[in-house]
Length: 255
Ligand code: G
Ligand code: G
Ligand code: MN
Ligand code: NA
Image 1 (cartoon, rainbow, N blue to C red):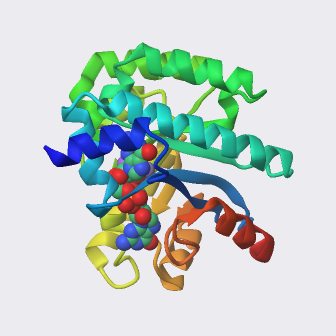
Image 2 (cartoon, rainbow, N blue to C red):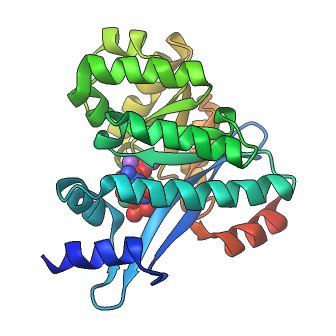
């Protein structure tokens, strides 16, 4: 397949087709940036802009995800070093795929790169989707325990789409639940979504988990979340994902 060949070349040759963008997450009480989520972008010279959910899936099937994740981590840690040198204290959230969480090499490399840059696990949040966690069962659970012990902040991504049981949630060694954007996008008008989000917030409080609402697209949704005690928000109303230089401008103009 052409797309696999292209992806391989973008990963290995100096083509500058891959890049990282960063989307801020704000604390809803202080309105300060607490974290930025690192999201990969691929603008290929023949295929054009390929959406990440598309090529990440292809990379997983083609045995290339390890290289993609290595590229993401290398770029993101360099940028995080730069944020620290500029005096910013927010964490950086990295998305992991299901194959990453089963691969110890990913974490050995991550820890080595962190120490080489004078950074630590507490600077990093790892986002793992609920469906990947459920699919991987007990093995994923052990991996999360290890990562927690190493000092990483852990978040369940796309929460609400994977049918976690209550007992599972109780045992999971994670810090944050990220409510999937499908429940947040219409929060200001959809009463079903309101009930659902309210229920997730009560559940999270019971298990002492922080909640991040993603997909906040309007002020009304932000106010509802604030009123209901949701800790963190992310979405186009706050900022879309931005390239490094644009993020720096955004931080300067909003902080
Ligand atoms: O950035 P965007 O919202 O288009 O991302 C679409 C999907 O691709 C999301 O599910 C996101 O988690 C995933 N994604 C984006 N960047 C990365 C990455 O660096 N690694 C992995 N594994 N997934 C990513
Ligand atoms: O699955 P994950 O949560 O990692 O995906 C993040 C994706 O959600 C990114 O592709 C990002 O561009 C997208 N996103 C972030 N904020 C919003 C938003 O407010 N509305 C919509 N529609 N998408 C968003
Ligand atoms: Mn994510
Ligand atoms: Na994700």
